[in-house]
Length: 313
Ligand code: ADP
Ligand code: MG
Image 1 (spheres, rainbow, N blue to C red):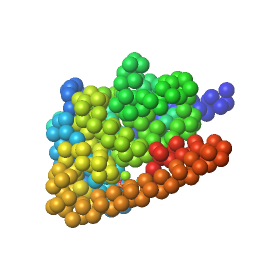
Image 2 (image 1 turned 135 degrees about the vertical axis):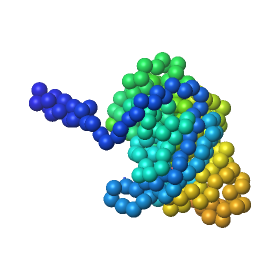
Image 3 (image 1 turned 180 degrees about the horizontal axis):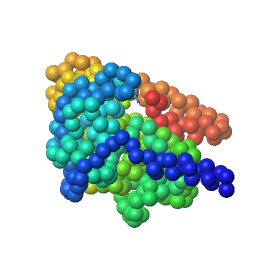
Image 4 (image 1 turned 180 degrees about the vertical axis):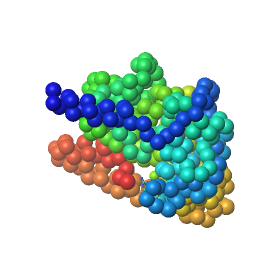
């Protein structure tokens, strides 16, 4: 009883919290891919100077836009504004021409989904981690898993969709957790899908397959904003928004930016070199693990499977 009361008390505090966000009465009833606009967005965290200065760009419905920039340039902050986790200090984010602050409570969440940099999985089954209580059929869950390129490994789990993933999903690899988190977003059929470096631990070829599937409408018709590092991924986007120090300093198709922006070219080349180094290091690790497996050390061989997928940050 005492424990239940403490638990109830904590949950009630969350449910009763009023929060600081205010809502309007615009209804999110549109269908098809969403149009997105950032207009002169300025934002700073409470404890510091501005992180975003006068950020403006448009995304036409159905387009895929890559957000590229150095670490700390404000990419995660920007994407959290796009789905209204926070509000700008000035300027506005518009979804289908409506200021996101003017939607009813739940309106933005009904249209837009964010797959965050750090996927959080609950100590629950694969299915429940994807639905989070949403009333969807297993067919829909499977369709989301297919677009997230997760069908194969989920089918190999002991109980498939009914497999418990462990606390924070520890029984899965980083790349697998990311794909479950992506399926969680996709099953909601968002009209705007925002991915914040959400496939960093996924094998590059699998990542390309995910992006290609999204472009072909695998998650339902959607506009996609993706924070990305790999050249192959970036090149799949219709357009790139290049951010440095909280400002959009260049935008356009990847092929154009590499010739018009020296800063952009340097960054993408640096990412490319880092990726090659990592792949080489992994190849060495996999070879070592294969050796270990031959000499009968099965635990090391398991690590090699992981190394195939997990790219250390
Ligand atoms: P990126 O995703 O491009 O690496 P972020 O949006 O995470 O960049 O961060 C942009 C800047 O904002 C950085 O200087 C970072 O230190 C700062 N920042 C990010 N999150 C917070 C926070 N919750 N509180 C204070 N400062 C933050
Ligand atoms: Mg980030």
